[in-house]
Length: 173
Image 1 (cartoon, rainbow, N blue to C red):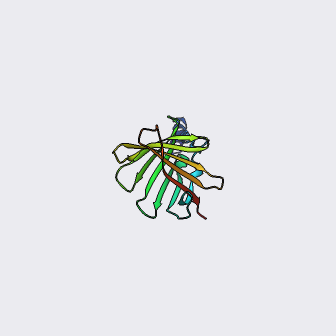
Image 2: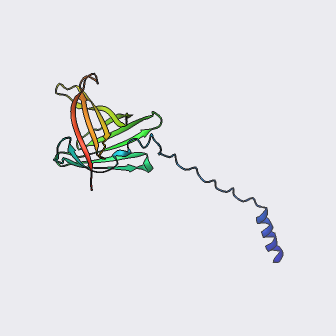
Image 3: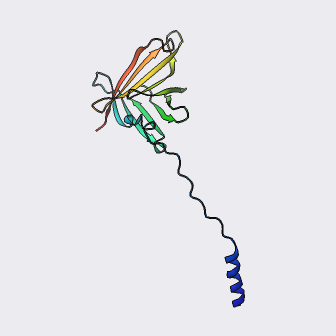
């Protein structure tokens, strides 16, 4: 009996053990200046037309996916709400935003940081003649900690621009 046990121990010692599992590499990091360029917009906000104290919406902007994206939940007091997902794309070197509102369809915006602001442009809606409207949104961190979202529209593919909207996001207390 002792001989059989000894033979079993020797056999186990001679059997090569399974290779140790290698620790998988960590997932790519979404940190650094390029990924953080839109972080100034993250927060809980009361939204006002620029120059007015009449609040028109609440907005929640939150980080998603370990810093790889941010999501806005737009909650207007009148009209339909919507959601956007914004992310930096290391392949293109630009920022992309997908907006889905309270009506069918979606809007894609592209752009990136320009002189400390985030500028995103995409085709959104049509003018009175049915021409596609190019919309440019500029998000700027203001000195008081608020964020200005200034929108301009163009019916001639960006040759000329007119004011479309101008909001101030003020942090909730």
